[in-house]
Length: 242
Image 1 (cartoon, rainbow, N blue to C red):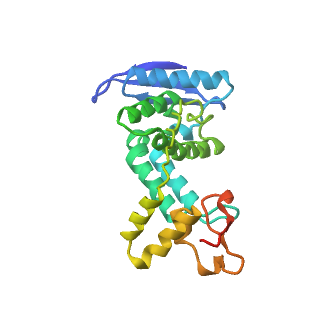
Image 2: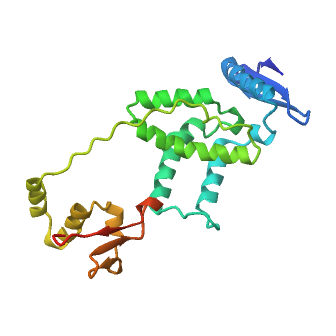
Image 3: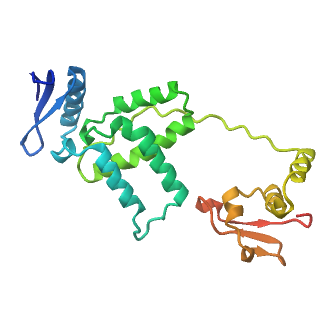
């Protein structure tokens, strides 16, 4: 394994040469020696662990592979929960606004844990909240995990990154007078929707998807049959006041 200086018309490039697990010679060029050394360090670690990246992993760009992952994620399949349109839209926004500008043109095997840590620091300095950064990583991790499972890379570089702790969520319950003031400003045809939310603690999505058949007037219960999580599927018991 070695780094070679390669002068050219567009300037000097630095080429890392190595042999993969099958003994086949491979090479990859970088704009700076620092990038070449970082890649070589990752190769040395993989070699120590008994792994080396496949030839395909050094050729496939992250942007192309992320598009493939998206299509697989959104395709109907047995035992796979279908993503909601809002989830698909948000996932696409994270990819195109935050991940593809950074990694889109890089090959899968070039992305390192150090790069991701640097990106997390950049996001933090730009004012992104820890929960937002975690959401970005929740999209990045499964893309690279698929590449591991398809033997394009030997490990997921997201493993080992310093994930910021989420901010403490502070919630303040409205007082009775505040609730009355709020209800007085809501149109009458929407008031029942808001009152039900106040009295039951249901989420907006749960209220929006609520159907009349889920309400048992005799037993005074509401059955939540659509929720983000399985624990959200529940029966809410109503008091006489509600």
